Amino acid sequence: MAKIGDDSVPQVEDDFIQHLQLLQDLKFLIAEYSDYRLGYQNMRIFEITVDTRHIDLVAEYHRYQPDHSLKEVAHLIVIKYHL
Image 1 (cartoon, rainbow, N blue to C red):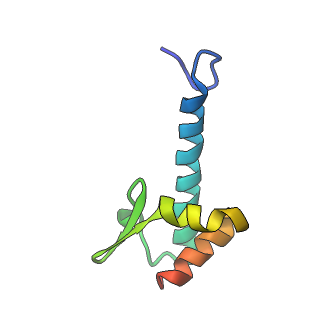
Image 2 (cartoon, rainbow, N blue to C red):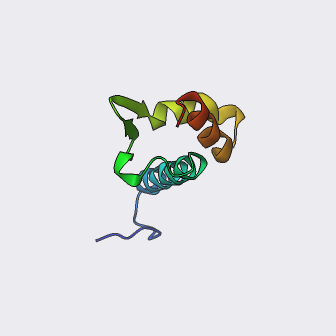
């Protein structure tokens, strides 16, 4: 079985893992910037669920990412959704 970092692992797999890590980092920052009003029970893989709202983290990241750092993206999401 191939392992991450092994030359036999396709680049796509490495990119997928990097993107998952980026989303995880974004969720940690959002939790921090919301003063932990959001718990990890609100976090799903690609979204945050608050009451009846579902915030698509991938869409939000792509919206802000070209002009903002990951920390800025997290802060903008917290402000936009009043988290």
